[in-house]
Length: 123
Image (tube, rainbow, N blue to C red; front, side, top):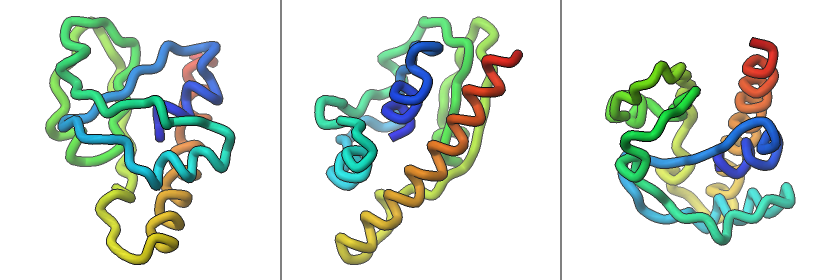
């Protein structure tokens, strides 16, 4: 969701890549709640950080504690930013409850990433 949000809201200012410590799949709930904002994730795929080894990044943003602890070191002076969001995929409940958690986390991510984009463009 973070990649889709940042691409949508600030993609003209940033090249955005997204990866996790373990590649899996894009959750159907993430696709559904992003579609509500007009952002299509259906063509996205889950990637492992190893796919980006050796590339230069200005920023590395981690959005969960597990990723922060397991994230490899990116050389080249990347500024590392972290905010721990709840993992909506770990929530168990009815489908409507799960969607509600995905929506909440989506909105929290969007607020965080919009602030990041504002701050990064000022510096």
